[in-house]
Length: 226
Image 1 (tube, helix red, strand yellow):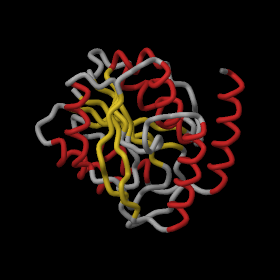
Image 2 (cartoon, rainbow, N blue to C red):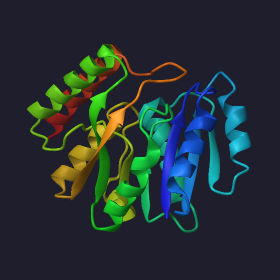
Image 3 (tube, one colour):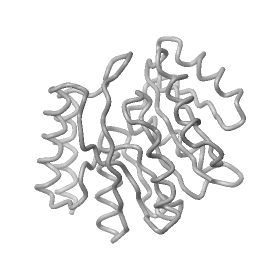
Image 4 (tube, rainbow, N blue to C red):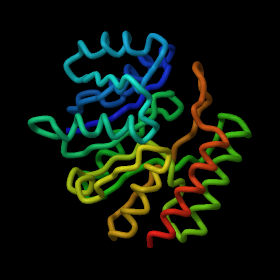
């Protein structure tokens, strides 16, 4: 079974589109989706509750925004606490910018032995600002010596044993890097699948230059802890 945590902050225009797309892509593959209302102030919470009437969907509501990583971790915790946790667990964005057709391939790679399977964005259709931000991330990560392309690419899926071993904890934008850097340091098998980053069709991106500054601070702390 596949379990996905999907953080959602003020995504009322996209929630149903994202969930419908994921479930269509997964088809008959057994799955559980945890929709995390990460402190939304629009109608995201109401829409999530409606979607949670589906047997494969769980709603988690956070009164205050817990940060990018905090929202993901809340969903992962709900999945890990199920009586029979999914054998593959992970997260994806709630903005609809990555076609969910990549999910079955990522899932199969985990079943075939990959500890972590993720996407690698080969084309950006979401504007020059996001492309520059991603280039900044890539430059920082290359200086750390990482061999994994597109560290922040999502969806990210992990075999349950690998997820437990990594003990992810970052509540901010560093969660993706924490997963990849931890997997590399532990000698885990990481595989990447190419994907196109589509433009947003609604809502507002939560990524900005302030996230780059946050990322630099976290990288500095990470390097000092080594």
